[in-house]
Picture 1: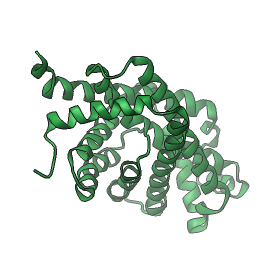
Picture 2 (picture 1 turned 90 degrees about the vertical axis):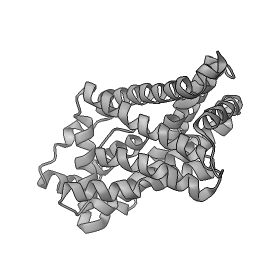
Picture 3 (picture 1 turned 120 degrees about the horizontal axis):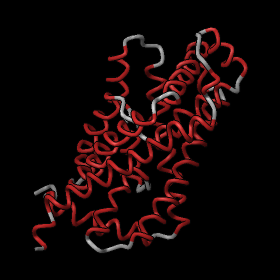
Picture 4 (picture 1 turned 60 degrees about the vertical axis):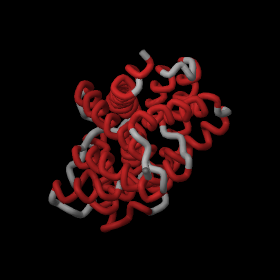
Amino acid sequence: MNFFTPAEMIKNYGAAGKKKAEMPVFNMLILGFLAGMFIALGAAVTNTAGHSIDNVSAVRVLSGFLFPGGLTLVVLMGGELFTGNCLMCISLLEKQVKLAGVLKNWAAVYIGNFAGSLFTAFACAKFGQMNYSGGGLAVFTMKLASSKCTLPFESAFVLGVFCNILVCFAVLAAMSAKDTAGKVISLFFPICFFVICGFEHSIANMYYIPAGIFASSVPEYASLASEAGIDLSVLTWGNFFLKNLLPVTLGNITGGVLTGSLMWLGHVWRSKQ
């Protein structure tokens, strides 16, 4: 067969999680930086492609078809992505790692992801990438960032849960394939689904919101945003961290751990009894 069965896939991830936990912190940070940059570039592409389209459904579908390219690069280039690494709960259940090793990986990779995303957001906002449509892309970016900063805490959390359920299924689906084409095709639809539905991904939001904040600090962009009636007062680092990143991250962890645990219980646990 040209694929691994679900039980084999879960066992394989258990071993992969062990390697992730034992990786030097320097490598976690570097590979986390690359993964953050890949996801941020996927977010930049969706904003660029959809910023001038008025039909919301068309924007969501177009974004859904483009954004999976970010995770494709993460998987094929061996990047370390915090949301996918929530599946390291499988390695815990397999007793191949200790909780301290998982938390060390999550912390280092999260920091690396943040640095890669922030670097991309700053470069796009400050060096003219958002000049499309006479600054229309910058306006779209600030409007999207503002909407994310005003989500109710519980909404951001629940949308984060469903997002990472799909992201983790995408990671597992990619691991089920034995060739490159199979990996790319397998991860495409779960990521497409979460983007079309508008679920919340903490690492993607490390681009979406800082990009809006950085854009709002450019006088020309800020003037266009004011003319468009966008409330730039909500675009603060405090709102980003407390009203979006915190609940979304907690939701992502919950969704990822739930996915990994249920897959382990369904495919591996009874075979150990």
